[in-house]
Image (cartoon, rainbow over all chains, first blue to last red; front, side, top):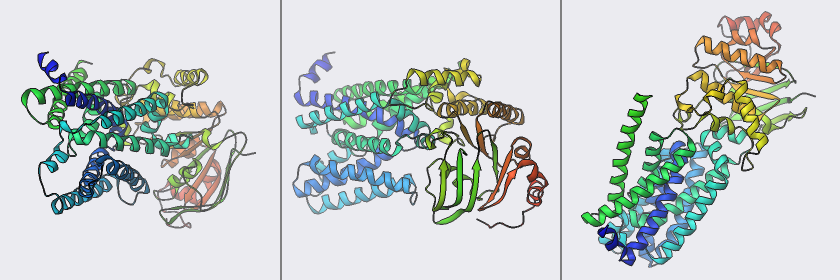
Length: 273
Length: 236
């Protein structure tokens, strides 16, 4: 308790907690359809693109988000197109784009500012990075994600379960995919400076996997993933403060522990039934 | 008027011709089986009938009150679906029209179709924990939510054991008796001849289209049933 009170006395930590909780919630909600559609790595790919964009922004002395948001959103649509055109398989397309932008980012950083702690912050995240504008942006994105899931829950389920059937019966699967990609891109951009470009995709993948072990209905998976994600973020942040370890890594480790527990619980449940 | 009228249809897949010169009709009450080897254009034809693939030339016209969106499609299962966490009710309802919420009449329809296929007791069961035959019944109930007129089935008995397959065929016959037209793509030519009213044998070009009993007597039908390569047609 005293640790929590101590943490909440720092304005930057309160900001980081607000943004983190919101980003965790969004990432978990978006993660469930992405994982089920075998599209888990899109978060990873987009965060690497985000790293490249942040490096370029630093080199140009521009505001980080004003460069990163359009670039990552464009990359999300490009990935969607590539994987639906069928010329490069989805996973290969993501690998090509993510390593490409990582390489570009490293080159840009090394010829301009040089590799320094700033670079480390981009890659592994920094709890100090969150500003008031991040808080506003994350509030906006969370509102959009929640609205999407409340209003379009049924079509999202139909498109996730069976895209071909959904298209054949007149669902605009392309539009839902685009919307999911767009919101994932925004979530990744806001979350990556705190969680780290190499770690943010954990927020997309782990809660969905944990919830899928425990729950047997789609609606329950969605709710459970959101709860797991927010709880893991909170626990991870407190642990990072108490043990003085990086926040992003700490949150991912808590998620892994929870995933292992869920695997165990799932096994026990199977044996019991 | 026919439910579906195809005239001189030509379909291409990744630049290669998959189907050409195909003309056939599906009438109300029909039970049509589409047979042919792998790569004979069956899957491409299904995508075209569902409106997921534009014909290169020729036409597909829907009539008799059938709209393209109102075809009840039973697809082959994807690996992703096999471990999908969803209840039977959630899957069946996803065949209903969502605007974006389900109207009470649509929910009732889902209940009726679950009842019809004996799924009412399984409504809260998890889809991935069902047997292959039960999963097919769930997908069939979903397809019935999307249509009242025409079911389009893609290799529905693949991976099912003979008893379960027989049960599925029995259900299809019943539905056909109630006035639902059935179009089925299948490898199983013996079953097709036994159950279907009409056969379309496809190998890029149509080799046969007509009544099942005529197909049984035709040269092409006999040779296909015996597993000999049929004369004529073109390799895809």
